[in-house]
Image (cartoon, rainbow, N blue to C red):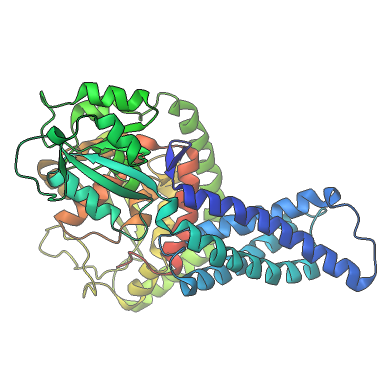
Length: 462
């Protein structure tokens, strides 16, 4: 993987995306040439329309990211790829139409867009047929040697066996005399020269997966491997990079302290984020006010009780605030006074409530909390104080998720379905810690784009 603005992006995805951008530019140019020849005019030099071609490629590419074209299944299922590509290009054309309305002047003609759209679908799908089959092959995966043969090594083996894995484990080396969990591991004692073993296997990365590091670190071996030009990584950092989350099972304070993350440079990023939050929340409130008013009336007609409901949530640095949402449950949903997670097919949800939850309309009033500065558009979901008190007792480092402002959407929401138990909360915490540790505006943009995928395919809604 390559680290782009502190966020890990698989090499295959990055290469596929760059080729897609080039093909989109080509599709826009071909669409222009076809239409110019059709009406008998001089097409001119392509440099005269770089702005038009660039906007076409950029907005279509953003739509592709938003609908999940670069998800784990994108290189494995052509049916999946074709369906998402069609949706992405269609949404991109709609976005282009709005963009051209707001920024008139240097725009592609509607006939150009028509031709470019079909050419783009053909080129992008052909790219997945040709490049996708190659990128999914083991030959294009990083070759990893694992130092260790215990439970951690076994976890890495299972991770490497996933079809979407960007690495292939070429061997295990047992570094202790204990009984190995990974039976095919080669004992360190039978290898006279570990560095030569690494070179013979063509290893590009060595991962340290020791169960006990005290007095067990093979420093001489690691130093020789590192100076031989092979990348050396510890278990927690490798998992963070490959899974997009911080692994709680192996996390320790020293790793959080000494690993990269929680940069002091985020002061500028936070200021830019606040400017975006204020601008976007004002615009969104103005645009969606009729929608909010309409569904507020429908909620009132559908069931007894107020259209909106307030609930205390925990925000930045553990401070509480009142969250405003459209009511989607019956007013006596918690008549016994005990806070409860929402369940699948929850009987407490009203008829209108079920719909507005699926399409996330119930979340729109939260924009007011964003405008006031209590929330951001992107961040960990704010939980209720009762849940926070319980989870802080049961989950390590849970309080650290409150070091960033809570959000309407977040890294956990776009990567993990709705959580309703302790194990779900643990999984989501691992994603929240990754976000808090690696926050950048680039990651925020990625999350906001992928939120569209969650809304379109109803992922995580209850």
